[in-house]
Image 1 (tube, rainbow, N blue to C red):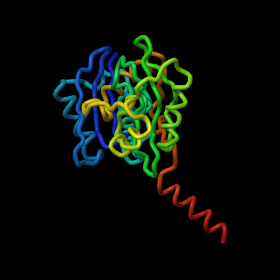
Image 2: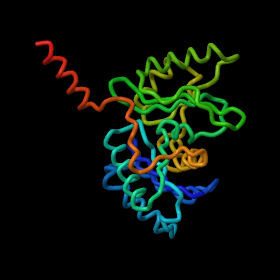
Image 3: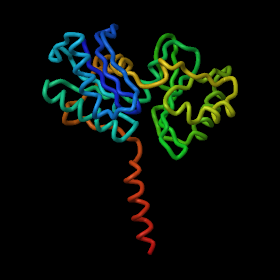
Image 4: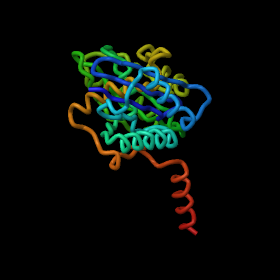
Length: 244
């Protein structure tokens, strides 16, 4: 099986083609461009270099959220357009889960964090057990303090304290708070594993596809996990107006 993967959920734009256990090609960029400017040209260049006939792919995997509202919309609309044109299914891969999947077979707990502003993060808690990727906590939107409390409570149910490996664009924002709370147990992924990669989306997407976890193009929609800032401000304004 062959899958085309897209990730524009954060600051990074990434496109990849994965066939079974082989990452055929990946194009990832994080440099001063909007995803609307980069995603389709990146896809066009990658398919050209690989001499890939898009009709030969079995499905399109997309980082379905959470993440940047604008980025998710661009990724989803691109995936929907391609899937409709080629009559292919869409595999919705949870963004945070895909970030965690960058790391393999570590003894540490894996905790991706995406900066969700207002001292909140999009996150989840994962681990590898006997070469199997396990979800300890599904992806969620929580305050950074609440997340660190969750990680501490998690350790109460294990025989020994595990290190916690953090990755994602929330690391530079919350690194000091993490180290203050967890001390030497806090680990941080290197640069090449730190951010979103479409290769991870594609690898997970293939696993989902084989399990029958896919949707039609018309049924696909991003998973935001929380309201956008504009929607929150509108609700707050409505509450304020209602109190007068």
